[in-house]
Length: 486
Image 1: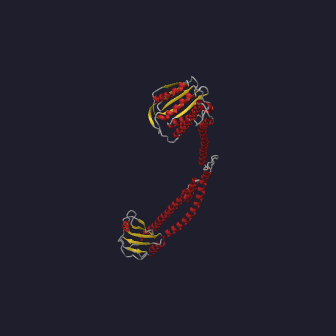
Image 2: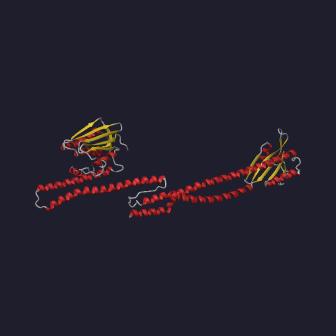
Image 3: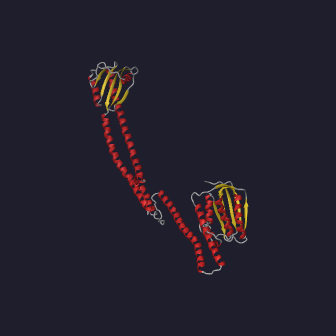
């Protein structure tokens, strides 16, 4: 209930600003920006290009007209006699047409004609005028309101022309600005309309893209309460189909883990309950029988002590297995002489082998040193050799072979015992699994030895495999890196 309450509180808090953090919102914004930013850039560039081209075209038109007048002024001697009504009329007409002003300056920098009739008779010494007398035509935009340019008035033969005056002309750009404002207004209207359309399309497209994820979230939400019986089926896109397939494989593993967990709990309960039941029966037998002989009393107490030892062994093995199952097990890695290491293990187990009349042989092909956790790996190899002894036949043998290459060392444990059926080979490393339950209980097995062995080997980045045949014997092969890999 507390978990559900916290989850609901978290969902409420996310709901307040969850949309702005959602993939749907981010896709929407991305699509909207992808649709509007290019339009804004293109419209801005187009308007700027239109303005530049319009100004250049206006400047060229005015310059061409001024050059025509310049040729007429030079050939007619207008600078000496500015009373030519025809040329003056053309001059005024040109200035009026371009809503500008034209000033004629002679070689003495004296203004002889001004269409505004303001500066006639005055002297004008300006940089543009001086440069024009030197043969340079100038043109520039002043304050964005009009274009100003200078055109030389030439006289003489083609190869000996001299500058006898300058036409200083200006043309208004108000008409261009007005057309540009109208065009900008139209573009803004189209941008707003286009932005609304792009936003609508972005909303629809982002919802379409996110829809498979919503379906997936709804399907996964059904698993929160522990419903592992369904599958995820989202096939809208190749990616969602791949996610569905991967998730279904994960779900299958979760189901398997859940089955294993339930089976493990059941096995643990059974294994721990069995010795307690036996002790309960023995204790009740002692209580109900009066005048029991001391020998029988001691026998019952010995049986109770054996069951306590068995219970303690199961608990110890379970604790060992839990420690080894950690994601980051604590290993005390040291450099160990593996030959001597195995000799010590066999030395401890030989009394058990002699009691069972089983011969234990150790063969080493080379001297081996490796980085291992001596305690944990000793437990693994002890389990393998002890099992080979316990599940052997009378007058049998156990052979332990040590070998190595440049990366790994190998330990092979073979026996002449009863063997393992082929259909059990895939399960022998599972917890509490026993091939022959009755024989295992007779010799005191808990069903955890091989699970502990595999965990210890895997924690050393090693591997273990088994080959066996019924009534022919079993061979376990272990491979461990010479240098521990972190």
